[in-house]
Image (cartoon, rainbow over all chains, first blue to last red; front, side, top):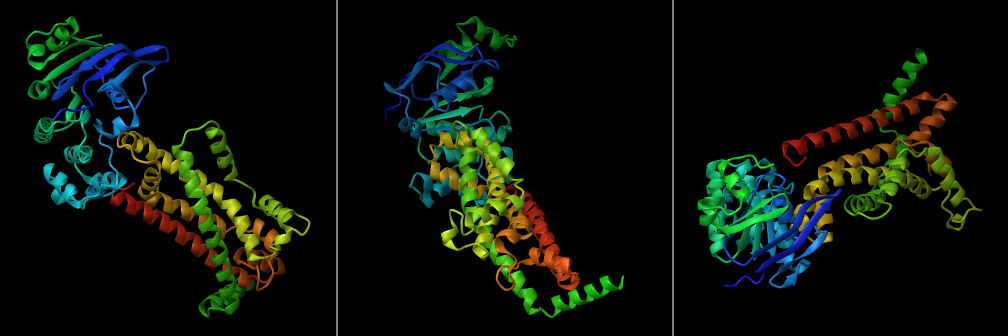
Length: 237
Length: 235
């Protein structure tokens, strides 16, 4: 099924704070469905780009289009985002999921049960969400993000603090969701995860996209010297 | 020393025998303060939440003004309400001066800024947590406001208790606008002031003990609520 939010085109996008260009005339076009991983050193502007694509912040210069349409509220409605540190409402696990559906007037207990089952949290449905472990919290946040059947899912280092077991559960879900036509754009510092999941890699440095290549090509023969240095483990300043 | 002991004994008798005058005064005090509290909460929690989550020009100034109003001198509030409700005042035609309604109005003016300012602080902290999430989920403003109030419920109960504590223990404003009229506007604090000035310490002590007990109960309730919130990981 074609994803009507594709292609994503960012043209000459800049974010300027206190005279610094945190995103510097960035150009990016994402046409493929599947999983796109954004990589790069700290401060490269990865999170800012993701927030821009999700409409949480507006760019100071440039334009972003989704399927030829400029960013607008309707488009964000069809996207979801999982943040690095899970934000949970001060309610039960179940109520955290119910909140989203009730707000969109599409409350359906069966849908919540399915989401809980998908992330393996059915037995914790009545527990306070804030008492979950780190991995369980991130799984709950992912379930909440997927409840609305988004066309596009953004993940900002969603597994960075998780143990391998929790990471595997999340990666399995992401694979499944991606195959079911949700476009996934994720940030990761984990080279192994990028190799396991990514179809395409976008490598960023100093607010720009240095290269955008299929995952295999990126790890075998990176084009840019920044990506080569990054993969060698050199410090990129 | 005998005076204290006699007064204390009489005070205990008044409490134990549930003296009619004592009960009438306590009942009026509670009616006035709880009415003022209810109305203040409706305005205060709503305005405090709006102030916490909306950004607009002059927001900082409004927050500063509300914070400053938390320390409004009760006698000044009493005087202002008196001037407005007196026969020659702009609202004199309503005939509210020296009635419980006037006392409620004065207490509302005193406690609403407290409710607004504390609510604003509590919700602001929550807003820091939830802002990106709600934006990401495209949550409607009304749903967001409801969520903030529901999720801050334990903290807001502490705010409400703080408002109640201020209202029930207030004397300066209610004595000016209520007039301390027997069987009509005489509340615990004004009775304590009157009886003490007359040298009749028994009733004053009895009411003082009850007022202290109420203050302690409110503080205990606030502490218990905080504890409960932490235990349930809602804090």
